Length: 196
Image (cartoon, rainbow, N blue to C red):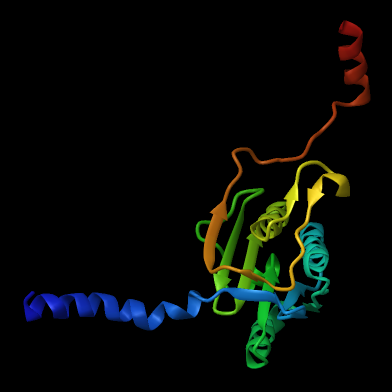
C-alpha cells in the first residue's frame, strides 16, 4: 500500500475513533441492585407522559427490585438535571417533553410514533401522544419483558440485578394512527346484533 493510501484511510477513520466512543457505551439503569439513573418529567406532563413514566418505574422495580427516582421540573431545569446526573456519575432518562428540550425529532413524529435516543449517559424517549408509552414499552421489551395479554398472568418479567440500555437511535411510526380498541356505540351495536 502506498503512503498516500494509508493517510487517506487515516483521515477517514481517525475522527470516527475519536468521536464515536461517547455514544457507544450502554446506559445502566440499575447496576448491582443500585439505581444508576434519575428520571425527569416536566411539570404539567401529559397523561401519556405520566403513564409512560409509571410503566418505566414499575417495570424496572419488578425486574430489579429498585425503584427509580422521578424528578419533576420546568423545561429550564432539564439541562441542569442532566449535568447534575453526569457530575455524580449517573445517567438521566428524559421522557416526552423533557426529551424534547434537548432537541426535537426530525422529521416530526406522527401520532403514536416514538423515537429513542440513548448514549452519553442519557436516554431520551420522544413520543407523540401514546407514542411515548409505546417507546417505554419498547425499552422494557429490550430488557426481556413480554406482554401476551392484559394482566399479570400473561406478562413475563425477567429478574435481574443489573439492566442497561444499549446505545441506539430507534424511530418507529405506526401504520395507522390509533392503537386503541373501540366498541361501537350502544345503539349501533344493538342494530348489528339484531341483524345477526
